Image (cartoon, rainbow, N blue to C red; front, top):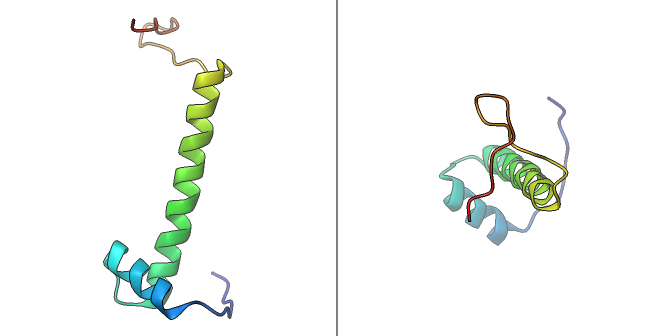
Length: 68
């Protein structure tokens, strides 16, 4: 793990610590960064589904039918 020195807004860090239930600033920053990455990946997947670029397969290997 790399060590990086950055300036952070104390009020924002305190809020992030409360949101994620952490008591250490480094834990809060890691949790926030992980959350951002997960949200972005999830949104990319949703966008791909909406555009038809990604199709979910059912367990039998066929494309899942759209629910009307």
